[in-house]
Length: 366
Image (cartoon, rainbow, N blue to C red; front, side, top):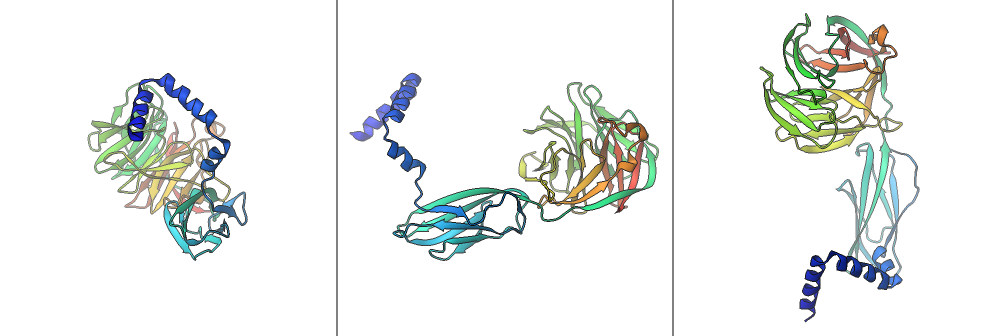
């Protein structure tokens, strides 16, 4: 009888939004305060910090204290960091130590599972932010060679392949994908984007070129040889920089977040945050994957950084201010942007928006 009454009440609730709202309000008003408190505090065990810190650094030990009533027996305790099991504490051990040396920078979520003697399990969660445990190397660049660059090209993305530079340019109504001969700066071929799109970063994988757009959440896929448009892809954030490690696309959106993308389906594989020893690095822009590290322009800054794509730690800060043309020293638009790597000959190229030159550089100690 009770079973059928519950079904009938459920049907009535679906058919009448006003009745449902009235019943829910009445239920909340009629429920005893003690009952609500019991639902909000259902765990009988408690988890506390032994020593809470405002800023944690990768490698800092994290210790929790488990508070268990004297009348309760604990069979075991398991701890997790970002869903990966860390260790299993001994029975009734009230101190839980978590090692953090292998964690990524940024926010990490810890879970403590408590298995009670009565067969029940209780879970506790805590998120903590971690800074990098290393200070980036302070480096600079020396100019090795200078090549011509179209001063009308508002450079948003850049990569090198077999004697040619591929360049993605921005500004609505002027955005394009271009193939340019490095030595002469001659434009070999190009594809203009529709006027409503603001072109951004580019990368090549599997004989295709993918070009992001800024706020349209749309990317374009081209045949690498002909620059013929093959397809469009969608993504849920802004598009800024793009590169590849050979199997995954690596994408920035102007924040401290880096996304790893499946190049076939453009689905997100994972994401990380980029941190140095002081905190997150915002405005990550044009990207280039080089020998296991990712190099990134910082929007409106005259330096680039490199970071570890697995941990998110900033490894180097590279001063490029000597490259900035004199007329653009205080310009906030025509800034350093564009990193390309010639893997076969181990050459690094840098340029900027509307600059007249592309520079082959060598990174050296300051």
